[in-house]
Amino acid sequence: MKNLKSFLVAAAVLATVQVSAQTDKETTARLVESKNLVFNATTAYPLSGADINAVLSKMPGGQSGNAIQLNGSDYQLKIGKEQVEAYLPYYGRAFSPQRDINDSGIKLKSENFSYISEKKKKGNYVITIKPKNDRDVQTMTLNISQNGYASLSVTSNNRQPITFNGYISEPSAPTKSELSR
Image (cartoon, rainbow, N blue to C red):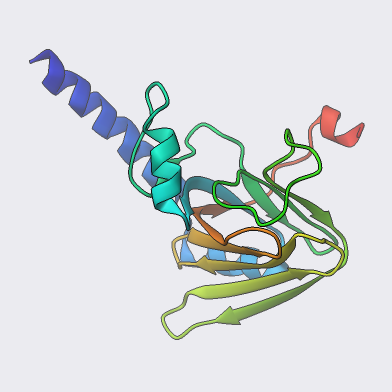
């Protein structure tokens, strides 16, 4: 009985999280058209799943499967009219070593980029971002459903591609610490 209660509580929490992530069609359209939105990553899907599984399965509490859950993290892609900024993890194979091994994620801040938005037949959107001044990130393709769920594919010059699932939201107002940077 105790396990059943735990399961029901967990299911209710997950249902609440899923409902809060959804947006309506009008909000999704407004965010895409304004070029001002945030993609919040909840799951990562590395290309080299077998290699990642071998490492993760040996870690305490390690998980297996091709999906890596990112719940509770602040991994985001922020898109604005003037700037695109990414702070995402990377799991996979790199073809050339990073300069700083502590800085191995996808970190990008660019004011020089192309933004192409395309509306598909069923009301979904495809946004293609190409930073022009980043040596690593080649293309970021964001597929957005009408309800705000999204998938981000990152193609790199020096790494295998990686895909993230998540949802879009409106940008929050900057905090005092962000303004002082």
